[in-house]
Amino acid sequence: MRVEDFDMFSTLLKQRSGLVLTRDKAYLLESRLMPVARKWNMKGLEELATTVRTRKDEALLRDITEAMTTNESSFFRDQKPFDQFRQLVLPKLMEARAAKRSLRIWSAACSSGQEAYSLSMILNDEAAKLAGWRIEIIGTDISAEMVERAKAGIYTQFEVQRGLPITMLVKHFKQNGDKWQISQQLRQMASFREWNLLGDLSPLGQFDIVFCRNVLIYFDQPTKAKVLESISRQMPQDGVLYLGGAETVLGITDKFKPVEGQRGLYSMGGFSAAGAKVA
Image (spheres, rainbow, N blue to C red):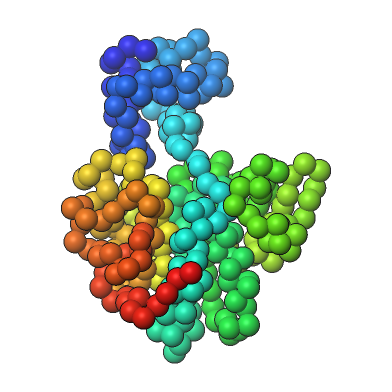
């Protein structure tokens, strides 16, 4: 790939998705964009680059962006965040929201929906305690393809074997050939829409709990700060933000602070885990 083409594609991707690509990742760009070139009946990446420069085709730009987006997800990924959610975050916020009996949860960069549906399974288990409550789970992703997959709630054998307890599979999924579909009841608990984290988040509304795990690792420092600042505006003081195990707010923003004793959990200062233990 020509250096000028790599630079053009990497600039485009950073502007549209926040993804930062260094030149040692040229092989990744080539392997993921060649299928896009073939889909658009182009001879190769040089023709693709020329077309992007000369014709601002939004459908083509979307295909390029989606091809480079990492869509890695699994049910109950890393498990600990979901134990925290069940044993600490949910009880604490239910107590704090006892008057309005309402909770809104956002799964940002939700990929094919496993994170949102993992939360819906936990909430289904806690249904008796949540009787009369209004619970919303909203998943967003930059990829239209992933959003449609999440809405359908259909997963391969491999996908349901990654992190999903067999009891949950039997209880909440129906097998159809070599695929599994999550129950209509759980599909109705979560809604999904296409959204770019770099854009205006205000139309999404306020959230009590935000899962934005393993997303910031793909951004540079200014983009991380911008995204965290935007998320903070969509949360109350005692709202809870989840980041991935390799991510932090330290040295990036002062909007969030780590929740003491709870790795990966952040708040703007109004949430306390004092006296809580997560198994």
